[in-house]
Image (cartoon, rainbow, N blue to C red):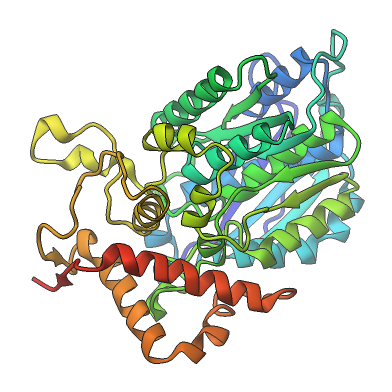
Length: 454
């Protein structure tokens, strides 16, 4: 195992001495300011867009975005395979310059607990003052305010966020859409979905803040990149908080995510760490909300679909005809680029695989809502062959089948299962209900699908 320290640097003058928590830690400095003394890695892109609309966030909101981007650098560029003893758990320190170190350090224990839960790693955090030349990063707008959004909505390019945006616009709200991306596939779907919303809701003001947040593969030397991306939602929340803070007043950040994925109960014991994400888990979102309150950011995270399955979301969409027409152009697959390995060159265009966990839930939802699914899948018909469970094409399907079998034989276990990914509070009956209904939805879709080792 190799311990890493990822240090956010603000400009050439940021030469503050950093003392890692361990003497054997490998220190990587990450430049966050470009040659024009502008914030880079996508954050300056977001600030520029806001400034064009006459908006500027507070320095504390920029702090949060810097922290989330530094975590993104560590999460995506420190390999679990090579840098951990168990193939999963990494040990990483983050050192971030902020506008108010005392306020951030007062929340340090809470932050460590929150990000440990989110990614399954062991994190340490250090907050230090910004260098004098970078004490002010929020440039004042050079024009009068031209936008007046009623809310902020996360917009990933996926089916759930598309439904969320449709429902808000149909309800006569004017949400500002917030996206972040790194790869071209994600960017393509976000751009397309935003453009068709603008065409469909003619005459409505649709504003979209997009930030390309990412880091080159060579950032951390002698280690491969990492594709599990467990920390991605913190970057989403931080960008949304940046936008909400710039809008001003009490702003709701809508987090459109179906309840089954949000809970993400592990399908089998092996998935608790490695294959069960917690990006919108209720406990994690509550932790982020507590941090936002501590920082004095007047924004509220809200998932209006926490107790709905994906199929129920699609069926209840305020404009079902529009959703059905455009659903095929949203992206839900966990790794659409895997098609580049297809033997047939004509099949190498990125697309949904059709058999990963998000794809299965998506397919079940669209069949539930519309009885049809026009999405192009790498494996369009899962019943056409026996899926090999020793390969990705059958592994996830078989895990669903085993989980469904256990749920049928022991229905009482649901009260324990829903707590496995993390603690829950509030309406426990509703959490159990959405888990069971979501699994049953998947079960109906998988009826007749065969999977076994080959």
